[in-house]
Image 1 (cartoon, rainbow, N blue to C red):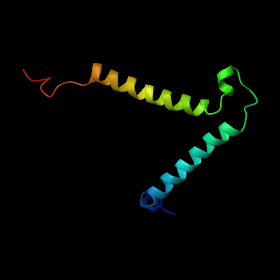
Image 2 (image 1 turned 60 degrees about the horizontal axis):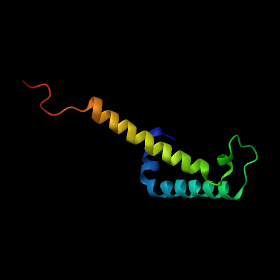
Image 3 (image 1 turned 90 degrees about the horizontal axis):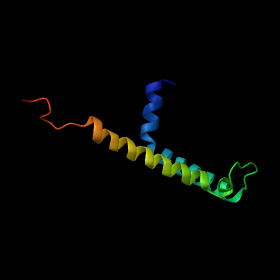
Image 4 (image 1 turned 180 degrees about the horizontal axis):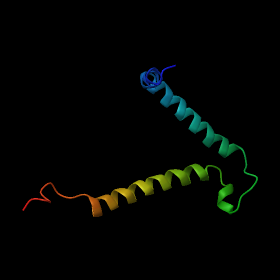
Length: 83
């Protein structure tokens, strides 16, 4: 199969693929809640769903820090180089 046709197929079926990904992620969280962990280094790692919540909060924090650094260090006004 040609790569272009394959990518076009994925774009055409994006809604279905997105819902499949959502169901897969939700089922992983449910499995984490139902199946106890056998090896935990810290007590909070044995809590059901801790890994999913930790991943969500750390991604949001990473995005917020990156946006803050961008506004602080990178973004300039439209007339920054004008005299």
